[in-house]
Image 1 (tube, rainbow, N blue to C red):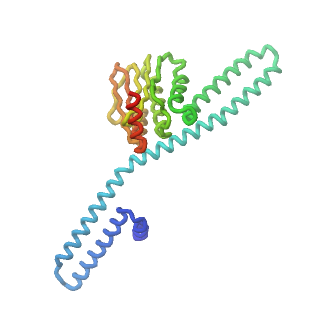
Image 2: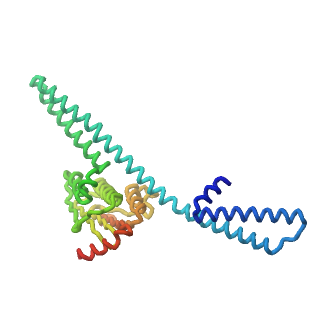
Image 3: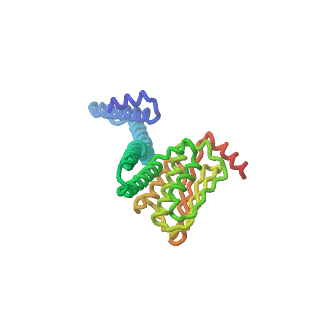
Length: 298
């Protein structure tokens, strides 16, 4: 305990000083009580004041500790999201660099072999080459989903558009991406959160919604970057606590928005489609500039 108190005292933080003061008062109170007990003396009023101060410091320290504990779930969620994103990017690079290169090498070897095989085996080689092409394309698509490298080079709008084209090209869903403002200067963490939420919403729509139309909107507002995703699918009843209800996709969206101190609103009813609205607040240094930009666009 005492090494920890000495370390905390060197940090000079309010909570550390409060912890040290509480320990000193407890020791002084115990020493005074022991001395009075040995001398058979009554307890004076000053000692009662000391006990009251000790109890007050202990109560304040418990309050500070409770506030620290209440912050831990948010910090833990943010840390888990960072670890998850790091693992996704690592897996995406492994797929693209290792497996993609192996498949490309297999295609080159097949082409070399095809030139030396008799004509009756050419059809089998063509089928195998088609399979390798499809597999290589799927690996590249999965790699792009796990590690959207184009966010840094192309920006958020272009990356979202490329993702929608790639994901919905053979689905029959009519979609649009509405963005009437420049999205330059968006923080990388916010851009990744917007991309992942859109990615999850599109995946859920394809799996469950049976929708025919999808509209994605991005807009700079005074409050922050606003994301709206709306489809005309079969809809569902959103749970108040998605994680407890097994709605893991919505729980992941909520975790990302909460980690960035934003807001998430999911509006849906059976047969009425789904509308997902998220707002990511600006950093303090850009909030005023964002408000001027939104007023200018209007």
